[in-house]
Amino acid sequence: MNGVDRSAPAKAAPLRVAALASGRGSNLAALLAAHERGDLPVDFVLVASDRADAAALGIASAAGVPTLALNPRNYPRRRAFDLDLFERVAASGAQLLVLAGFMRVIDARALQPWLGRAINIHPSLLPKYPGLHTHRRALEAGDREHGASVHYVTAELDGGPVIAQVRMPIEPGDDEQTLAQRLLPLEHQLLVGTVAAIAAGRLALRDGGILHDGQGLTAPLQWRDGALQAG
Ligand code: GRF
Image 1 (spheres, protein in one colour):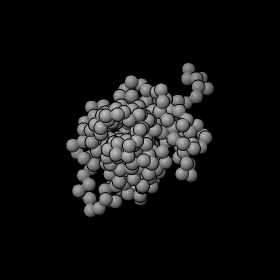
Image 2: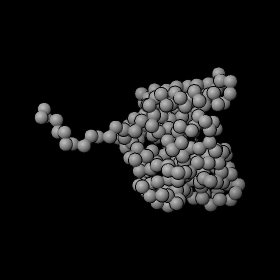
Image 3: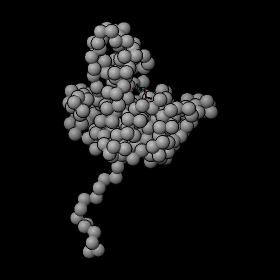
Image 4: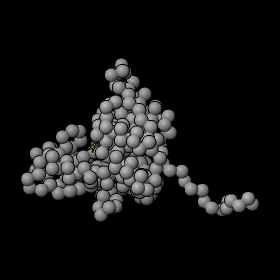
């Protein structure tokens, strides 16, 4: 023996994560901050954007994560852009792709290799309110509760299997802005908690359904008291 204990189990390499973001990047910042604190044992390998001026790119660079901006206008059609973007994400070695405020519908063919390996954060209790203006729509519907969802990405906008949600009450006097302000920090916790669970190998997409700790989920997990809990 040369002093190395060969009986010790090999430590699994951290999950390689890429993110796509189009805008301010607060969800990305939450992921990077959790990583910095030691609460999210993953490797961030790439942050890419469809907008060169996205604040998310500056946040990634400041954290030492490689960045990429591709302009959709330089491609003849949406599919060509999506295929190029997703090929570059694959080339980064990413095993998980996090859509953190990526404001584009993704072509089904580009997405195909990523089914079960790409997640998105959406500010509503899906299946309610896919698409835009979720806070306004929750208020207009007279909902008493609002929230955010993390789901596996499919070609259907905000339509993939929902992994986990966070809920909060709508208070009298709430408007779009107050809802957005109260929900955002909860979104951040939900996203960090869900990525951590994926990195720990606790979640998987199988035959269109979600496995959590090897058991089929019948309802989304709920983020409560700082942890993901069965609904
Ligand atoms: C968040 O509300 C997220 O749920 C939605 O887009 C917004 C992105 O915000 N998909 P940020 O860029 O992460 O601050």
